[in-house]
Image (tube, rainbow, N blue to C red; front, top):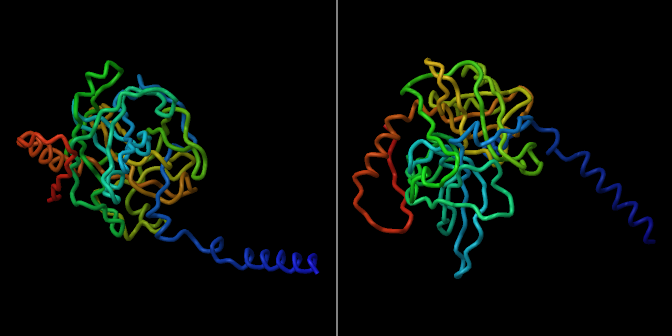
Length: 299
């Protein structure tokens, strides 16, 4: 009796797998909202070539036990005590986390002691990242100490001019995964991605309902950002030929999905917002040691 039962169970399982709609339907909005970020089909980079790159890490305190910080997003250094990342990387999730920035490293996953600089303030347009619109996916981080005191190869990256629209081929950098379901990269990587026109991007996947003029589409070929790259920088040459931080890795559909680009927050649309947040920080006389979340609405 046991063998017939097992055969029946086996054929039932096969029938369910074949008839399941999960593999027959096109990517759903939910998948777009769960953008997996990491450099796919990129090339190894050294910190000397990208001294502005940073790893955003967090830990949590649970009943007196402080978990070891681990890397999960990217960021870029835009000031001695300032870093830029994606809002969805720092949106509140239950008990408040402790955030840190690590700079000057080719690899942020080695078994060694890193100099983690605490984040003291997080500036965002809203408290919670809005998954339903994907808008304003940008966050300014104030650090506890200067990154230039780290004694490592660190450089501040320039921001683009307000309103500047990028064209041509740019570069995205990160420490994330190299495939959608793969393992994390063993070091810093970069990939070339070509800017895609908004009109073209709107026809890709489920992007049309999310795209605004404050976003940039790039890629769609064999290279892309992937899990762990969120919040990291996309750099392009400005009108003078200088590399500037043009985009923040935001969302997409899978990693290096053929014909489907990644979407980035356009930094040039937030220059005034960044300046406003920085001025609020400079005027703040609060001496608390606890991390603060500060809302700076986007005009």
